[in-house]
Amino acid sequence: MIRCLAVDDETYATKMLADYIQKVPYLELAGISNSAIAALAMIQNGGIDLVFLDVQMPELTGIEFLKLCGHTCKVVLTTAYSEYALEGFEHDVVDYLLKPIAFERFLKAAQKAFQLLNKTNSPPANPASDSKAVDYLFVKGNSKNKYLKVAHDEILYIEGMKNYVSIFLTSGRIITYQTLRDLEKILPTPPFYRVHKSYIVSIHKIRMVDGNVLFLGDQSIPIGDIYRDAFFKQVCDHDR
Image (spheres, rainbow, N blue to C red):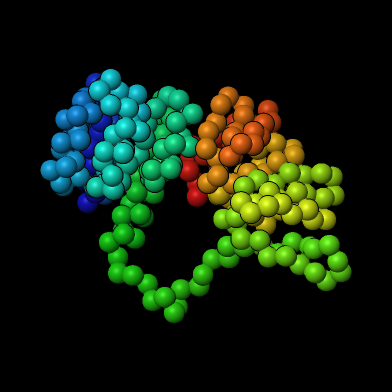
């Protein structure tokens, strides 16, 4: 059983979460709290596996709570505002639920927590038998039969220019004869998201979102109107 704590300064919200928790066979309601300070004390006393945590609370924000809580337990953030999603995922939250929360969406978050906690508690896999995920790609170089290896974690963002793309890296830039559409098909989601007809970005490299603009280092990238809803839905659903 996964012992759960529901934390929200609004009583109706904790009652709804408590009701949802009690409907799921592998979840156990360990407590509810309308105070972030009281909830933090409960967690520090041990026995809590998963917290459903509101972001906007008067004593502590959900993000401040996460910083104090550390990795004591798993956390699912709840709020009416999607702009907190990116910062939440930087603190390794399990999921991010947008209010009003449907039970079907709550159940999806619960299943993610169940899988993560079971994985954490299971014995480690044999490294020799575990196939390593591909974390790089090869792109065409500036001469025939020349290809350059690019590590995924070096990519900041990619800008499309008709039949060419510029791949902006932490260490420089590569221009290659390839389309943005082709790269979109082979790059993993996450961390890479198409946010504009001309841009793919790595979510790990985003330092701030301000309205329709993403900031990666000193560079600003616009979020296209037709990509905005899909981008935030993917980020908030955390289907990774």
